[in-house]
Length: 208
Image: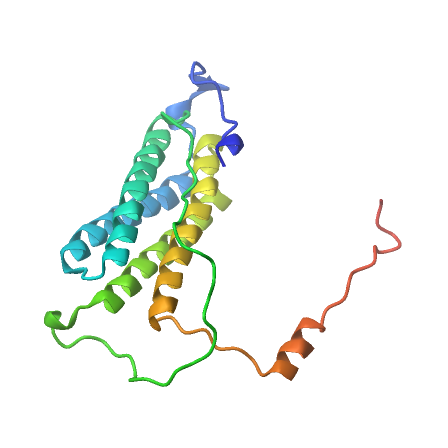
């Protein structure tokens, strides 16, 4: 991801007749405002939930992700304010668990909202953290699609992959504990779906 940060020379202070700090469209400004606000909300949530975590593995995930998210928030805010390269390129989040998932459903109690703050547990916390990443992935994708400042667009674009990776890490943690179950289709239905699509041939009137 770092090699993707082929941005502009930091000595450059203008693009055309406009200072880089003002090189943002209105749509971009509003979308990135939402991204940064959501990032603050997510960081605050991580701080709020941390004292209630009981499982050490979840605590380790929370701490690693918080440190990474804090740094990513800072460089996003930095390039948004200046319109120039941040102090370092976007980094890649590396989760510290395997990719194996458990498939199938195990019947259990229906899920429902808490009726008391005393009911909070690791399952509820991990679900809340996962929701933070889903929100940020959606917001950053929306902002990146219409960002006019090329530096901000690149930082957002690279950051989306990190949201996905962190969400995946938490979903794997939940899956191991039975909190994130993965149903499958019947074998014959699965095979039918896999065989439903074939390779496309180039249209005759389209250029090579």
